[in-house]
Length: 177
Image (cartoon, rainbow, N blue to C red; front, side, top):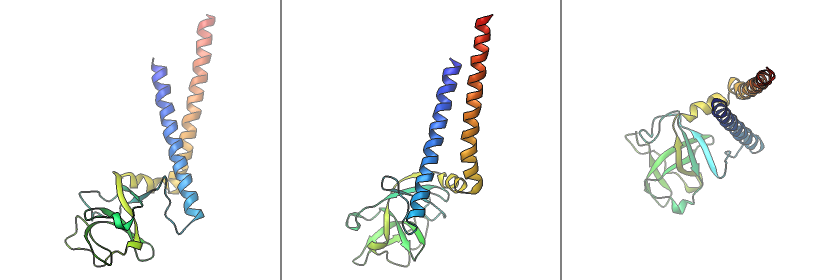
């Protein structure tokens, strides 16, 4: 019974690690192939929140996922991610629509953003959030994180194989006696 539970648990962990590695490799490949485009998986673009301007909706360190949406479908109270300048991305709530674009404001800010967001600068609308996943993403993309992401699953796999081999040898000895 314990062996079955252990095997299911270890298989689940290995599967999750493989999916994570695949996700990171895919987004890294996309980022290197198209450095001017934001990597997306099934149309969802992940971003790490860097400030608390949108609290309580989400906090610094959370990971938000956005998806493309036509500018005509964006409504007041939608949370959008948009480009400000060449490299800066901001995720704020739409508080007003104008002919020029969208007036936005962070939920935790006292004033509206100073510039109107042009429809062409909208990256997407907020779909869901994974709390604190941005910290994990940042760590995993570091040299230590990549090393651990490869070595820990490999070590776990080797330990499982050694455990399985020892179990088979011991069970053969018990049967022989």
